[in-house]
Length: 313
Ligand code: NAP
Image (cartoon, rainbow, N blue to C red; front, side):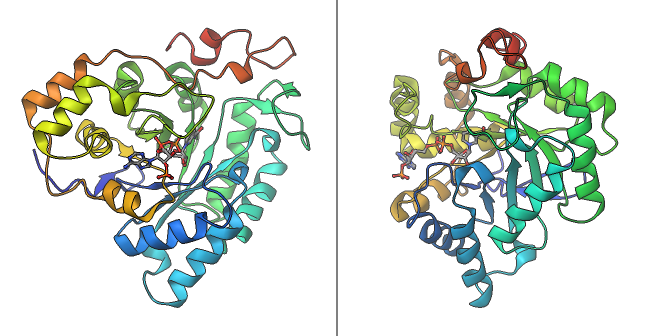
């Protein structure tokens, strides 16, 4: 097993840095310094989204990093995501334009459809769902790729079925599907589908999102994970992240704590030996983010969690 794994090659001849800093629930006043610290530590990939409400502060941190010559724009991989209330084709370039303005960037490396779900323009939350038209939204995303606002396109929270449907109509294929992935939700089926279709899987909540109150997460306490961690002399978080790299997907750990930002990046000069790696496939599987918030009776909403994930639950 090669220890490095700093990048994964993508279908559009770019390389995505394998460890990206997550920024969901990174609070105002903390997210900027987290991004600044992470890039100084060596992170070259930041995972953003308009809905996280913190892109402006991230933009200020990025500008500081560029002004101080810590990195140049081309050294970084910046992802952001189109929120559900901006799926209308005419709203896509406006939303991406706002993200670029907030991040103080000329282009993104990757722009994702955040969820295969659509809400009425101008509304917040999921109370006003309307039917999606992913092919139309994707066309507008492709136009943003054509005009250079983003160098890559992708999706998030797409099942194999939804990804397959998009691949059938896309002129510019999605290069990434960003989905929940950690040792307790290994995405075996979706991983195979992505692999055979040249779509890179990027793992969100790679630590099981322990800080999210509404999720019952104990991924980092699983006895197999803690025993592997003990045997390799690393923390459970490091083993969870390293497991992701060895599985072949990028990981997006969120932290606003400098010590943990460093800890989460110390995953390159060691590896999980084959026998312990195989042990980790025995961990019981359960999705944390089931997406019940997208299931209701209104038109456009999913009728069940099964329908949202097309049975991949
Ligand atoms: P996560 O990265 O799995 O976990 C983050 C939590 O773990 C925070 O509470 C953090 O607290 C704590 N933590 C960080 N490093 C740790 C360590 N070494 N040991 C113990 N605890 C540690 O969860 P996530 O934020 O849900 O997912 C990561 C990123 O994926 C998000 O930030 C976002 O960018 C992306 N994401 C995308 C979607 C989507 O729909 N596309 C959904 C969810 C997440 P501190 O900050 O205090 O360290």
